[in-house]
Image 1 (cartoon, helix red, strand yellow):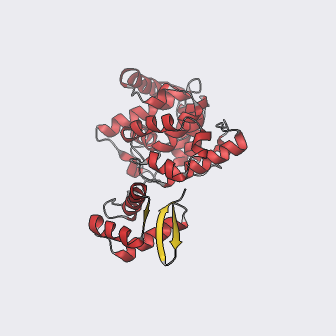
Image 2 (cartoon, helix red, strand yellow):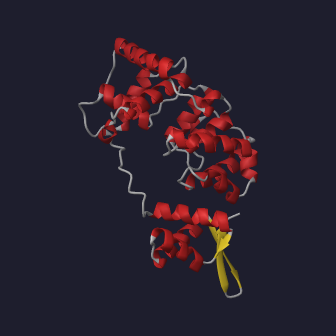
Image 3 (spheres, one colour):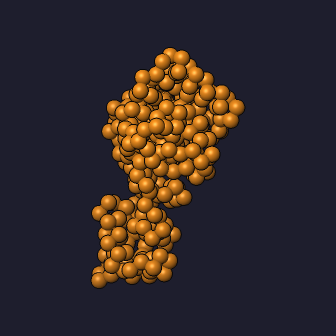
Length: 281
């Protein structure tokens, strides 16, 4: 959809007028520190902002830079990550910190192509890091931005591609202030959703999230939390925990434990005939 200059100016005014009155305040918006913004963007993947604020503050206090993240054990990173879910992101962050420390002296590169090579960082996250950390005029869409463009420009359409949305994002971007523009745009989208306006199912990228209760994701999180608390446990103890709390069958629990071992979250150790599990150090 090609917009006229008048449409773009009208749209920008609408977004900024709302933001100037009702803009949200978050800790990561009070800094331009690239490391801190990198952490916030990873935490905000698939997680609501209200759940991120407190863990973010605690995390950057405990780990003030990439060097401290890289030097920490995976156990320590997972411990600090609790409450955010999707523990893979913590593992990816740990890996990314080691790469950044080794190749870029612990600095965030202002280059989306380099950022995209890091574990867990896709195109949208790379672009958002560049925009917020360096005020770079990158083009991206995320959930709230998709809601804004679909609601205001494409409400009559179905099966909308990100290519269409990225074209709108590129046309309307305030290149003089990308950082503030994206703050404003995401806040407007959050407002629409709070009013029950959420046409995200019109997007091709929309995938209805599977039920969390009883899911493998819930079980994986429970096992990691259990091992954080108890340090080491044998398979029988883990099975008992999940059978009691989530009514999970032992064979299903073992399958998930094996997957966690394969993915590098958990280690299996043996002492004589005994076998036990712990989080990878």
